[in-house]
Image (cartoon, rainbow over all chains, first blue to last red):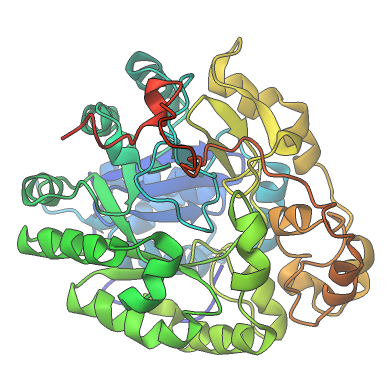
Length: 99
Length: 385
């Protein structure tokens, strides 16, 4: 809900990302609820497309590819980039190291 | 997008975001503001098997964690088994305790689990302020529990404080205690529910103290948890961080020790009773089909408050606080920061406010030689050493 302090931090759209293994996802009509069992934080994914993108992270070569797969347009990408950066900052998603 | 999200919450979700589960009405303390009027165990409390079955339901509904309280939940002999069962079934546990059972051995066990969070309750930063509300020796018990948790290496546990007119001046002291344990401070609003219905008038923060609290939250809010309970203070200016809406029956609810489901933890009264988990369809059916919850999820009228310029910030305040002080649910909160609650509050006839029900307070022993009429009338602690 807060619109301040949207710091992209170390988030890079062109890197490979994954959902943190301690995070559970509960789909909702508006998108989804995320809960991190380690940090005990709750987050909201505010659109179904963001949920789709997050679920694609594990199998996408980059976050940008995941957004494209979820149908996020170029115009919307900066908004979704900030949302993903927020998830990265709270450890809901993390960099995926090469398998 | 944010507007849509709030709308979704107001219409209710398919499962609660957050659920409070009072495990027992038994308690070794008799806090004067106890929301659930706890003291004696209720003989109808859910059995171990029923509790486990309920946890299975929570897992199925993807309720990520439950806030367990009571009573004093740790006096249930199956408490630690239930905690283990819940975490094994992907239901995280945050439990509130007065600390009486947090021995060094238990502290070590808790420190080893990622899925269990502990909240130690104190209502004063000193025994002088705490003990008149929570009982003689209760501050020392809580501090000993915190010492044990810290010695076991547990970091980030919560210290939970209900704000009263006696402890508003100790906000910095509470924060210092939390910092000294590498713990996190959680402060919540005093509600006139349970035994608190009769002590609220003497304990609730005074109008000028509400302003102090608001300013302190604006300055320190990023590092302090509030359970979003002070949204009525948002009318002072900027809304406080968090979900600034009443989640009762929409995104939160309460399951009490006998399986009754209420709209929220502050509304233990038949008017807010949605059903019982022992009924057909269990908890899921109550959450999804109860008429009460359907009503709470329907568009609400703000009544007299809609004319107020601050309505968008406070949304009329807390339903339970209005109900137990005898105010109409579509009128101002008794602690409305604009003072709109004062006149209606003064007009409520003495003795006409709803009586909290049920009441599990321990009777004050006044007759000599009178034996408890049930085993559960005795202290819950005597049987569990």
